[in-house]
Image (cartoon, rainbow, N blue to C red; front, side):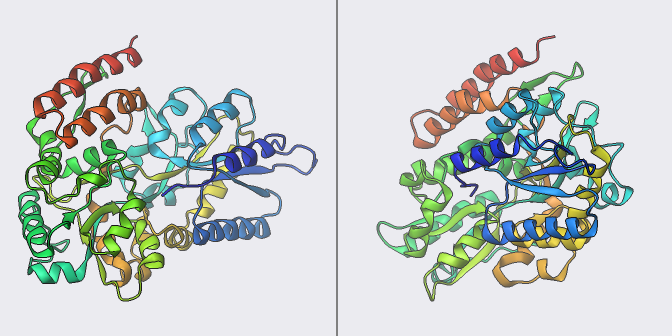
Length: 429
């Protein structure tokens, strides 16, 4: 759902490059804040908070710079190398590793307030810990849920899962068979939008105990594909190839591409990120009854991998303490609630997560809040070489497996053999 124009983001960042902190004013610090907010409510909330900060402490004014999720990695790489990096950087935790190890991000441990350190749980802090430092503040997170057609569920007479009693993966398969049988020819219980199959598979795989990446005593990461790693891929493939309860045509689709089929009754359930509720609430036709269900649970319960949105400070920032105070202001509990509601996501902070507006049944907020304790760092969170492994090895391997072109043995061989060759290049001493 991160769809802002690449050109617009690049121009925004380039236009800010000439405004270094404190330059041209003679009046002390001036901080540039690269924001990737893109939904209208999120942009409005973020800009409002910047204005409030500037009114509250005019001695350290903050300039809002609009960035783009589509191109942020390349934008930041260019700005770091060119010496024109923003001071405060909005990004995602799975994009930080190369910048952290490359010395471009400040270690936040001596800069963070005790309040902020205590408010965010240790599992969330682990998503931004690389080596001996912490290089970002995780503040928004997004579990995967099932967005379902309530009438289709009722018509099939299936048990409705709850966070207290979710479906198991085998029960999910049985429910899908019953739903498909009740819906009629040409309709499917599930649509798996798997244009990017890797993050969905690995993050949901944590519920079955899958890890895939294992760090040894020497600090090096190696890939091992165990029975636990096979649980979720096997369910998805069986639904598509064997049971025909999932639509094969959606394998190459993005998440938004499946919504017209959901609204039109072609699919009964779509596994989506939590923030897609905003799009559904706006676009669903009048009378469409939808609900939010927890994703299936496995041997590890409702554990899921996430890569939270983060706020970092550039190592080149000459006013790190002022930047840290601005970050602390943005992430005070009431402000974190505003940012979470603007992006339709969950805050990481325990105080913000307890807010009544994030515990309501409307639009499934309560379901998401109940999933928060099971959120864990994405399996490849701190693995160097992960982007190359994902693009060159894992994505084509999973796509072939899900289409039926290869079997579980072939998937295992490619992920492990070819994957470890890629990771080894990044871990040479």
